[in-house]
Length: 104
Image (tube, rainbow, N blue to C red; front, side, top):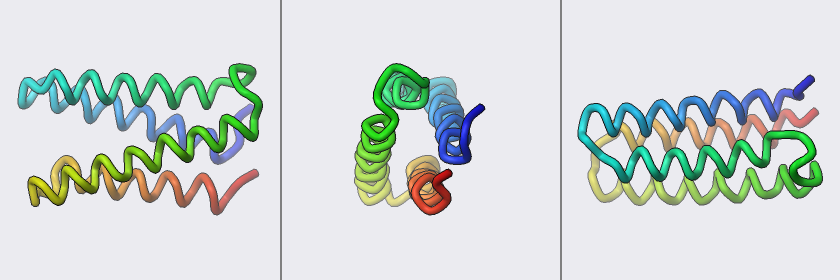
């Protein structure tokens, strides 16, 4: 059905949404909920077969993940707190690495 890179992306999407939801529930951050939903929706479009050509979808997903990498790095540098930005930074690096190192 899905290759390894797609499975990694789906797991990342779920974690991204959960992070936004937790940010909203714990801190009342609507920005966290909205931004995680928007990025997750964009990633879903790259993961659903038939929406984009496969090569374009892979590239777009990598660009979105790279953008999230920058967002989480900036937030971590600004707050100097590992949670939640640092954790999401690590997960984003891991997702990018796994998707690109173990392509099917």
